[in-house]
Image (cartoon, rainbow, N blue to C red; front, side, top):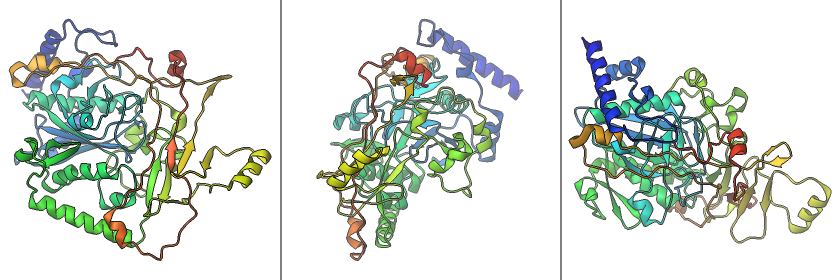
Length: 493
């Protein structure tokens, strides 16, 4: 009886979707819903829900972490509190740690976003997808631009979170069932890294730290209460809390448990700094990828999840068998991220694997006498800078990299479920943009915890802080880009 009811449920959903999308076309060339968009949740995941006391119709919330390259799906129980259903490895994200600033910067967004049924795309060219809703009100208040920043299948990213086809199929199905169960929208939280005291201490002098501290306020709310924080805007910042935050109060009431967590983390950050935890910045050639998708010989370059003894929240063998599709810019993944240590006053210090900058005369002799290194550090600037240039070639012609990981939008669920949801204005079809990797110039930041750092700390040799630039022509060659794993400019996910 249960199996028959499930079959009827799927057929009804398929019929409604077909009616809703009867006149819709996208870059995939498919009219109406596909089998993948109405596929049931995998039996293993349903069994996992049962062991955790969850129903497939329960509301969801999703959290993503760039540095760890992980995405979590949470489900809300009858008591209103969320519990973790499953953690998925992210196959590819592009850009650097930090918010998306402008269209074309290859940055995956960071912030709090609301995903409505109208942002789900069952006919994506990248198997399945949903739009993050970037830019939101806070993004616009900060002058950030961009569009069609998606979570989708196929391991290719130009500002998106790319999962494998199998992974996005499962996430999509879980979200679909939550919408059918009555959830009007779900929250998508995107972070540069897990908002732990260790990471806040480590990245305390990064130029993005004021923004990340703002994100941590929302993360603290969720982790302390296991409730979805109401999100509001005060000028160029987020505010989090209850109904007063949603109404736009600049100083919403803070729950005692949330305040306790924040105070505990601040004390721990201060202690870590006092013990000599170095302040660093992390620089990527172009984003990262979870280690489970890398060959064993190269996984050491992606140690964000810890060493070989780390117990992963997913089966590495399972994801190692996934079809990745066209991986975008694979050459930028090989080297892994570079960490640059920064002194409390904003001056960089040496880290392992980074050569010190040579004095001008010595540098001139080195240039005349030997081949320059792949990574060069430039001296005699008031603001430190590290320039990492990556060039790829196909034959004798330089490789031109185009990006088209923008997904289109579909309001299928909005049409299907009718009065269950407030009408949302669907976004226009995606228009791909050409991105170049850019890291903002560093600025001097002082974390309060630095005040307790030991004064006797030895000063290491100063180097230049990071700025990564990827070469890209103004007129990308789409055919060549496809051979390099980038989608053609006209493709619409």
